[in-house]
Image (cartoon, rainbow, N blue to C red):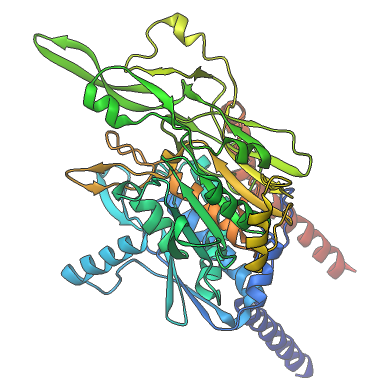
Length: 567
């Protein structure tokens, strides 16, 4: 009887231990990262952000329900990441997964979906096969999330910058690589105590019309305090501005204007330069339907940028890897035949460095870019952020822009230049253009304003882009302003907006969250040839192996038991 009681007690103890372990596992998330690239380890800036949270942060992810396999994998990766977030944020991190518009019907659901679109979360209609043999059916999938805290709502588009909603292995991999950054950045934006102030410079013919709708509204005003700064209306550029944006000036800068920008930089101010050195506009081509000559705008910025470490060349860059444009390829009767063909004046740019601004980023569309050269400035580090493909060339001034710029096979053979720089990051200590050049009267004026002249900057950074059209959007009569980086003819969406956001974040955000974009996610795919050759072997191993192991275990167990009781 005593043995029976002890036996029951042991079973009760085992049962309680199992229940306890299950309860503990529900509250305590733990995993060991064995990947060489630390795929499942949070970066130091993310950990610091999560540990420093003062208010609860609620995260709702719209990846729940019957999803296609690629989106299920994305949902699982998001859940694992948020579990890891909870390890460091504790009770301050609260998350849930739900179907978009769950519990809503008809007009209410449409209004809710429309509000998500306005926040920046794009829905996709995905064709899936419910059961084998059934016809494909369309399902609405919204791969996004919202972060809420203290009445502030930030949206996350998990497929932002992707040109396709079909999640193949490569797209899944790049999307997963950016999950930590996207969730971390949204939390940081929602909880920051001070929103950075960005100045949009005016006074030299800078673009300020519907063609910068995306830049001004979606990149600047949606993420930062934005002020429009007429440079001639101020005695100096205040250091209260975390960054300046110089967007496609068309009129020359005088020395007074350049001194203001120069001293702003010398005192630690950041600048995003978006410069078109040559006048080359699509309006000219569409209006005349013939060739035109691209000419120098004479902006008088060459010496200033040269002193900082770069030179924007007076040329046009062409690339065989380019976006499409409708051109006349023939005629039927009296009617011209139009066809969308790659046009080398619209290079599609990529990144060939590991900088967090452009790594893991899709291609960026450019229009009539100029090339950039670096200048020997020992205290300034230069990093190429965007460049052409390995099949590019430059056309020197006077550059003729022609609808049929590549006519023969011999023309194609001239595209021999590799990775021509179009966007450059400069970091270090800059030297003033006006070092030992300012008249005493101007020096006295600066001193009277309590702004002593600075000949060298502190550790600083700026970004120079030799194609301002990277930040412009097309405006059509039917649809109005399109998103920046969208081809109005093919509706292909390039990653221009993401690139511009990353540039601004790198300049104004000291938290270091942007570093998480530079994570390497190694794509470990099976070798298709080996899979085909060894299919039968691995099938037998996976099906018969477990059965053989169980039989072997049973045989050994029975043999040991028989030997024990025979004794």
